[in-house]
Length: 379
Image 1 (cartoon, rainbow, N blue to C red):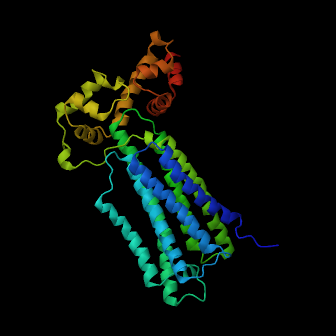
Image 2 (image 1 turned 60 degrees about the horizontal axis):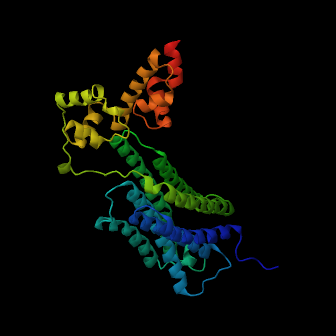
Image 3 (image 1 turned 120 degrees about the horizontal axis):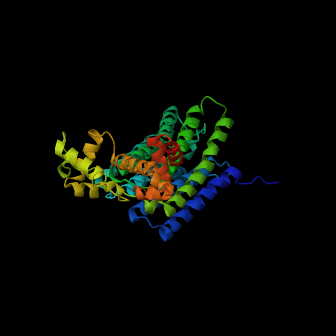
């Protein structure tokens, strides 16, 4: 009986490559997100697929590369693919969360990672045999450089993935600075997916670091697990890009100081105007109110409003407005003449536009659900 070229673990790499190529095509045919996002996500899929192909060629004992050029090309391809998927994931997250994101000249600094890995490969004359530490192929110097290269290729994706997670966390905070009503389903989905890649690549790094201290077979099995998770995450990211990425509210990002009228110490008049607009004019009752509209009503720059809310009221726009909405809902719930009004009607009348958001904020500020609050005040 002949030994098969591919085992089940190799097939997942083949499947990952095939799926990634299909996802690139589907991305251009089906995606509704902006073009730069499509470019970066397509680049990510290509690099993940190329990583799978290179790993297949590198570690499969039945696929033999005979020429020095092919062995060198495999090493270069693997290094470039790992750098590419790391940078593309990070830039993709930036592109779909920031309204004014453009690829700038300084983004080329990310290519320094490519220069570093190419430097290891060229200086150490590294090829696929040396990446596998074949005894007949390496010298002590090339072995040391190979160790450094593998360390770099394992650490780099982890750094970029967690940097992307940080960008999403900042993005969520920026949303709360600008909007009073928003769905966090899209940001949470993006956060979970990016965190999934970060943990998956961290797992690969840990297996790599433990590889020298644990049994080789155990380390290989742990490493193979990474391939299956990558396959699942890639497909999940594609589905997310089709369903949610184009729906994300994009923030303006950081504004230059010359464009932001921010005061260190707000005047008493401005603070009083903010309170009056909320308490007397009840602007919070307007659903989907954002900070720019709120600031125009006050006649000051929205950055100044944000600064005042952050430093004087110790909150953000999202929390500030919804606290008033909860207080409005509590007054209606406490009114015996409104006992027959449904909670859904009350939340709409209070300025909320979703039941989940209302329930979350009401329980946070009242310490109980709206139904329990109504029972308590009328008991």
